[in-house]
Length: 212
Image (cartoon, rainbow, N blue to C red; front, side, top):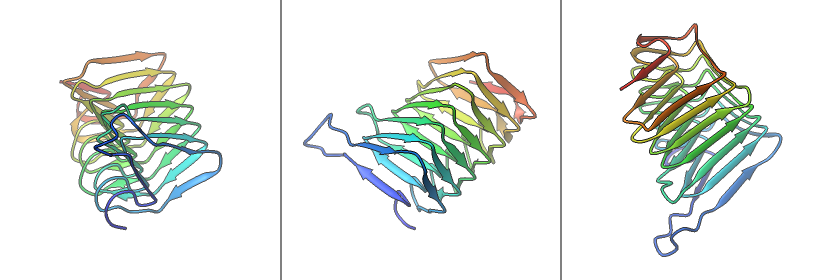
């Protein structure tokens, strides 16, 4: 507990080595659970680096931002690649992104699930700025909550783009905000193909999607 990255903190924020990034990989059978951080990344905090997770469970972590994973200041092109993962029950104490909080990153998710994650403000499962989010291949976002903010499952803003294919959203909630499933603000693109939204999802404005 304390600082950032309750289980793992990795930084390649070297001012004299621009463009060089760490490449961190979790393979089958990894469990990142019951960790806490006072600032970013209850489970993992990555700064200007790449993270790949395959068949990994990220469960019941908590932080101020990014309950499961936080990608901080990744403006050199940091990325997170998720395949066949589960992110369950991570909680944000004060900020954004119950499972993932990202800035300037590429988030690529396949065959994964985000279930019962909670953010105090925006993005019950994922919160992203200046980022690209791609969810595909039977990924599910269910029962995530943005308690006081927008985007029960996903909130993206500041020139971010979202693309969803073969993805389902259900029972996500932003009771005091906009977009039970998705919320976008000042963003470049929202593309949805062969996906299901709004099944039991709820928001004060825009039960499925809220766009500003």
